[in-house]
Length: 319
Image (cartoon, rainbow, N blue to C red):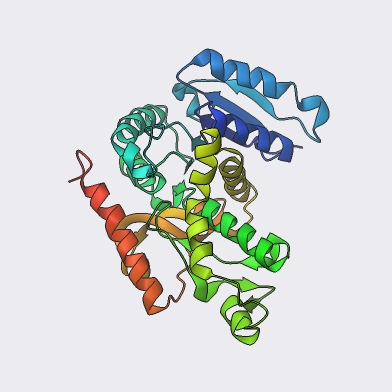
């Protein structure tokens, strides 16, 4: 006998939300997807379009349109709805004022439905929006997860895979801190095939003399804007990150993913939301992995947290 249906609501039927739904349908991640958008017809159109995939997938996912009031029994609510970057502004923090208004409206309405599941957030600036969702919802920090630097860490692995001509899944490592300009790569914890990258570079100085870690870190940070300036948005990568996080929740996979979460003493910081590796399972964030950073990395982490914290304190009602 089949157990309880696994239900996911996606708020925002734009490119990220629809790409996320498409990814989850093709990976058979859940039993039901509810699309929510301020334009109901767009949510309905995506639901109908996605439902026509079922003859070509391994399992059936029920897809339909809904409203905030229908979120009562959802296991996961994914928030992709947010403000678009202003023209000429290559800074996710530039949309903060608009994001605050949108987030307050969405989360208040969802919580009024009686929702008690897990939020997964991709709306930018994701660290601050995640903090705001946790504050408004009153849910424990374990049940409010931002995509954080998950996509940045994936971009880092892709760049390194190209430099070393290996599969990106053979690379382990993280971009940490803000999903934005103050993020950094924790090079002391990057490994290839289990071997520390810094050791590889020391042992093979001539072979890898062309490798510029600062340039790779810069390309990691700027990858999103490289895409944005060419086609006006990024959505496939972040949509798959959302699906990956959601799958780890619904399947209780216990995957370690660099997500945005509110810190409570970890890395020497509290009451700030930022990207750190965490174990993701059925309860949401099961544990934050506290890496032992080098003094230089810790200084970068501290600076990133201060930037995020300053912007959090500047939000109306949270001063």
